[in-house]
Image (cartoon, rainbow, N blue to C red; front, side):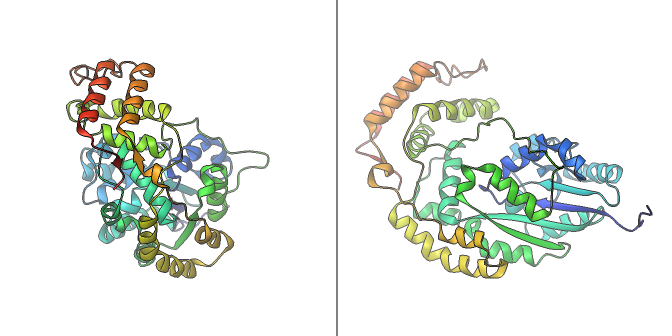
Length: 379
């Protein structure tokens, strides 16, 4: 076979958005690398994580320092030179590559996108972008729970909607992507809430969208259950109350990620009830701001049955009780934490000083009981 020397490898770049199953997609693709290779696709393993944010970081105007550490980036310019060398050594004409990072949907401005696509265009052509959008009422609840798990304690109400409005503007985001030069095809897909119960349906949709077929008789290799499980509304309110109370939030920052994961998982085990949902008023505000744009977006990308299903998903709102957690319930949950989790120190130095053992839980319960008056509300 004669290979055209001017031909490049094809690239599918999956860019999220956030809260649309990106981590599951990445881990499934990584676990299925051998199968992908048999189907003629490469999901690169020379980058330091299944999430390929390392490729983005030289083109951002700033990203969280934790992301730079996870992606092993200390000098963006040096990283870019290294990436160029790595791609040059591995990419060959006729190959098909797929890379993924949901951070691409939030960390790049217009100039960063153009620089990224120009860089990738030296190694790949065509370049196709795949982006999933989650309807805003569901997206907002998931994002809020993630923010609380990360240590924030702001209220879940109109101010939070303003805080993340840009992330929820799917029509504006899609318009920005559609205007990029260097992107040969933009493929927008709906993220449906049923994908949470059947994540392989999400993988099937992604594979069908980009034309990826596994060898006959093969099935996707799914990753083991992770620690990114959703919390109930009660678990989120408990974490929200704990975040400003427990001293480890600031004192233990050198070992913060592992320690917080332990606490978040302990809270998940002892809490119960439905997931987080907006109040009727907040849901109405979301509808007023975004439903007209959603209809325009669906008209632009093609009103398929899946997009219509995305529009028609039932709106779920919280009853009054789900927006409230009583101080007595907080104390009960903290007592259960101290009994079920024991000291949560992971053997890390300095954490006992931060009072995160069982006595620390009880002390936090006492502070909460003294501080709270009436209900702790969602805002």
